[in-house]
Image 1 (cartoon, rainbow, N blue to C red):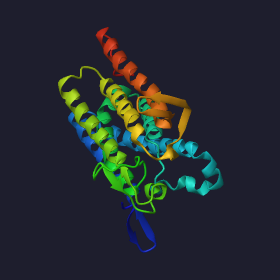
Image 2: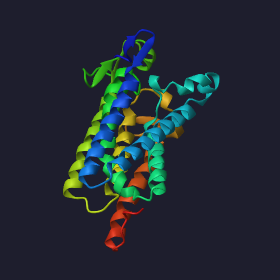
Image 3: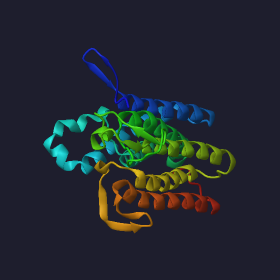
Image 4: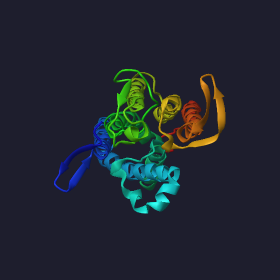
Amino acid sequence: MYPILFHYGPITIHTYGVAMATAFIVAIFLAARKGKKLGMDPNIVLDMSFWIMVGSIIGARIVFIITMWSYYMQHPLEMLEIWKGGLVFYGGLFGGILAMYVYLKWIRQGFFKFADLISPYMGLGYAIHRAFGCYMNGCCFGKPTTLPWPLGSVFASDSDAGIAFPGQRLLSTELFESLNGLILFGFLLWYEKHLKRHDGELVGLFLILYSFNRFIIEFFRGDVIRGFIGPAISWPWGSSQLSTSQFIAIPTFIAGWIIFIWTRTRSADGRSTSGV
């Protein structure tokens, strides 16, 4: 596709970096606007979003470096080149959550109230990043296929996908994951409007749905750079190891259910979760 958006003299603008920045800006803007309508201090939302962004980038990069440890030990300066790709969403998710939790505790604000505020927009930001960052960059690609576009795509020869599978049509798993983000965005907004009763439900549902969908999509991925863990497992369609993301998805799915059920049962007992 188009890993480089354009050149401006000696400066190269990478599509991945622009997409990542756009995803953050859109998510932050919509969350701040929604928070203002709900009576939240917009300054708190903006400050919190800044720390989420910092925590997300650091966490996403750290996890990616761990999966590529031997390579980065030989090329340590490339650890900082995040504009070329190389971020793991789960690392960004947990890094952002940790940064948000620390910030909100520091200013003595309820964690779940603000976590629910940003949860739908995390899905939207994820969709933007996958569609315009990963897809255009040619990373996070799928396995070889004969399916037509947009289900299958041929990537640029100098992209990760083009190097791994030169000239071959690959499953557009980046677009599958973008659709996953859009589904999360739409469903959480609908749930918030029609079914939500207590703070914490949306972030719990985000973790449940994202981890489940990501676990399934991982079976269609074709990049081995993401790493694998444990022995091979026999599935109806063949035998394979769990990818790193599938391995992380299991405790994330469980944690999502714990949060979702816990917030509802605590409230049912008459105890508020807004200060958690």
